[in-house]
Image 1 (cartoon, rainbow, N blue to C red):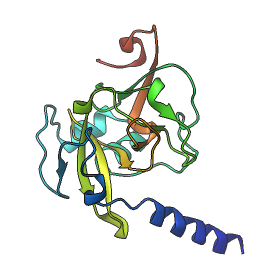
Image 2: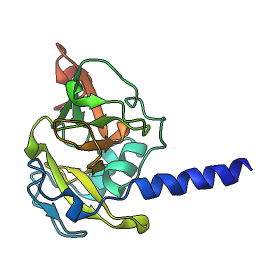
Image 3: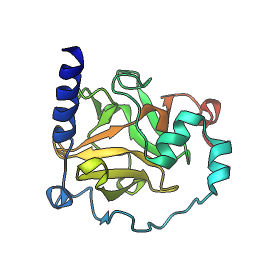
Image 4: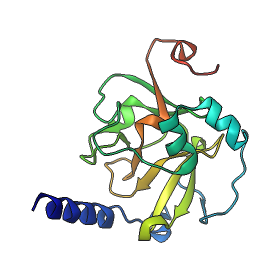
Length: 181
């Protein structure tokens, strides 16, 4: 019975996470959505071996292999501390804590990036769903997905993996938290 409930919950979650490219068009933050598999221009390109050496195993799986962490398991999903969230891959600032909200999905959720150029959007048709993947614009690393069911003022929900980010509290030097090394 418990496994049947788990399967039903997973199916509902996957259906709820669908988001087509057409549904996202028109939002002022999203200027371009790359097609699935389309090469995106990047500032930072490392070999697969260099990424493996740079990133912890779970972060490599998420950032470079488009993986995900289990809901409610990441260290930032329920964090309420004030500060800035950076990409673990590139050190680029991504989101301010002021844009974080509790979406109830079990992953850190934000309604807007720190800068619209910090995120690249790409169509993701994996796992039988149509979603919009979000990438770190410097390295092209997978951060999570964006949906159009978020709160005002943007109406967007950027759903990220904690293992893809580093949090730096306001007033602390990002270098002290491993950013920019």
